[in-house]
Length: 273
Image (cartoon, rainbow, N blue to C red; front, side, top):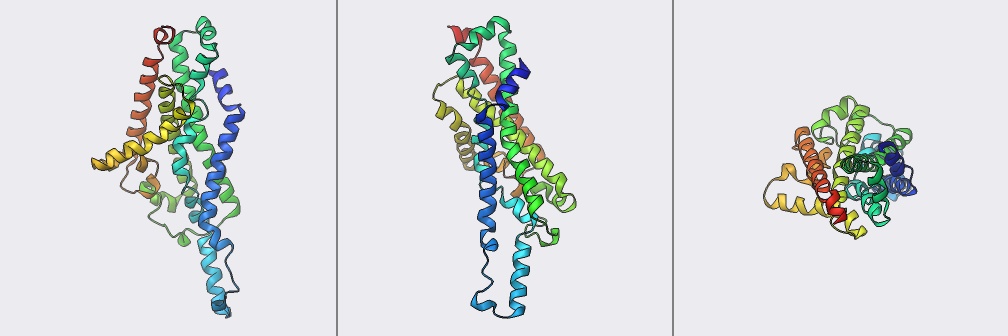
């Protein structure tokens, strides 16, 4: 059942569309930041000397280094992550009930095993939906942009707790960042799955992880619990105060709470009562 559910999640056209949407958001974010430099006007009146031209070209080259470009691709993406995580598979349980498939499944598979499989596959699909666009975007940036770490405007700052890793081993930093993105997608996909066991409105279900991200962040900010603010957790690369332990604790807590909530609400007796 696990393999079939994974295939159902990642072989769907919806999954491909989500990956492309995530990639488009990455690229749009990067383009927004580098657009002034790509279309820089070297014929401006104040650049009428060879020295001024050389200075301008050096400035543009420095701004278009791979480090600045890579971090700029995250600008809009952090807002899309909660929504992207919900799209691939969080509606599958609701669809199983709507189309009567769950009765056929329960006739062949233990219901608890079915629920555990849903949680696992939903998390994997949500994690991949968030992580894969970053993987593809990182490959594109590495192909088309070069540059020295010394030209990076965020040197020693961007990367948060991993800022020194950005300087020492940027490819390893990217892999760690992508893994944290995967964990984020895994956790937030469980929010939508749990909500799908309470309501049938598909738009509300897919938007709920984003509303949770905004709402809980607002509450935590008012209570001055900023280190566990969801909005800061997936912006760890620009918030050096957020530790790896805090990221892991929050994402595991979200995963556990909403997975348990789903398994409790989607119990066999609740479905057939």
